[in-house]
Length: 268
Length: 328
Image (tube, rainbow over all chains, first blue to last red):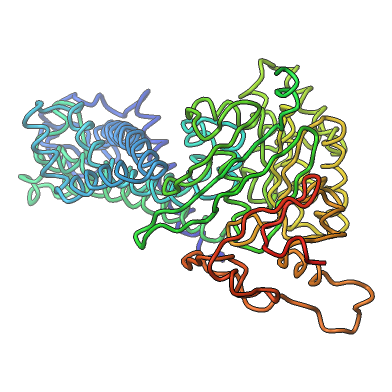
């Protein structure tokens, strides 16, 4: 019993600390993010620069903090986009069933079969490099998982008597779907959102690493990883810092999702 | 002409056939049933499980699953429900016809406060707003015998007892003062004392609000207590229709007679309980003759070949048996 909650607590603490860091960075970073200092290039961690400096002498900690904004922003928007459309499509497929369901779900299967990064690469190269297109691409990639989870919940719940009772009251299909059933199937969707958040952050890091996401001079963890790899032997801490933070945020959201899922299992 | 219309029954079901299309073929669930529900009456639909009672109820509500095929007419105060548009029937549901289900816990939305679930019905079908609507909900809750309705309004279904939940379900059903309420085994999931209270409540609603009720049950004791007339169903057929007392005093169909014999009575204490031999034919069996023939102790050659027609035996008393006139 007790053991199961551990992942929830770990997840919450990691995400809460990163979130706090992100909020602080909105008002304060130790150094201006783009301020270069030729004299302090590749400085190792010290009291002045806790995570050292990069090849332009910029403070890595400040850039990491600023980069968390990108990570959360991308995660939030991508999950919202994917969640909104995924839930909508999944709800329609699950509730109405039949040919419509078949059509929608085969479409989702096709999307899932397509490698995510490849799709994002294609999308970004067609519509242009930039953070907006990156977010849209990541959002679209996450639609199928939301759709599948929502669909299965709807298929199960539409047979329940409270739904029949709502129909007997003369409630419209739209209202039954989103006012009656959706709140009842929300918990697995929340878990999916948490997991989706971590994979969105990871995808953003990957795309930025490939130079297709966030453009310089805006800091992004994936981008920092890309910039630092050339200097990995010269100043390893510059590479390690963004790596650790990417790992942390992904781990945090995965723990959070697992924790919530465990909590639901115990309730049932 | 005027008089005929005003005398017309509230609900007239005529030659209703319902079958389900599956990968294995078409299966008839209801075969050509016809009955009336008069204004202000309580009509019982009785029969064993799987005889088509609930399917009939769902057909009246037009809530049959997509693979159901339906023919015949269901006339509700002059409008044919079978031919209605989806939007038309949706407006009818909850306001003019409503339904009460068997299991009060599962028929309420677990995440909605019970007050809001009653409120939704008024929101859908009336112009009431804000405080007026809240007041109406509270009044309805008081009408169905819920104590302290202002407090109960904000409770969730799991916080209430079974009897209270069923009262909430009834409150939802009567909120818009429907002309017809379909009660699908509303007391089966409740214990006996609560059963009696709920039956009394339904009777009161029928008397005071003038709603007609279709009461579906397999329990003859309950049916006798509450209904004004009874339709006995067997394997998708209607086999006997009669006013309640008439049916109990003079059952004229072997199936009804068998059911009556199977009711435990105080003077049969210690004796073995009667049961009708055999079992209900499966929905996949197609018999050319009377569906009850294989289990009927009076059956003779003709029953195997031919489906008997209804024989009128008196005021509103009909039986679908060749021997209806002779059975005693």
